[in-house]
Length: 175
Image 1 (tube, rainbow, N blue to C red):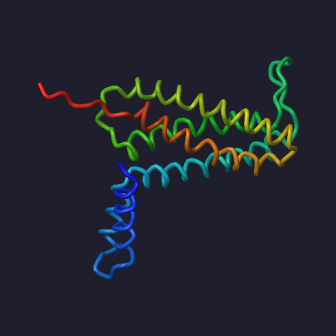
Image 2: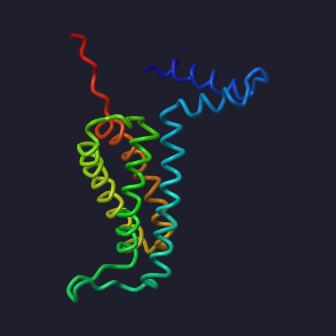
């Protein structure tokens, strides 16, 4: 889609908010009808949940101390908190995306999409891990604001992976 067409759609959308002719019901229908706005809304809900889990983990579970697993593996508190928040919000994110954002509730390939979602999110997790290590251990930023910054940087990658890979609609054949 060309830039002029996008600007035209944006202008028409914004005019509905300004116009007194539009009802709130029409505005809400337009917002809910936009896949990007649904992704932004439900993704934001999932992100806030992940930030809360991250904050609780780092401050009240690890108490900002390294976590030792099986007497052999030592994990820094910010990475442990990232992993815990990832595991929990992975499933909530998938179901929000599958049923509400990309609207494929009747899809027979739920398990295949879950596998593709896992692959896409592993990329997000690796990118988040590298950025978080950099901000906390190289630049010495505080962990929670660093995680918030990482989230903003990873979001674009995540949206593109979900749209183009995980929830990509197959073209309908006209036989």
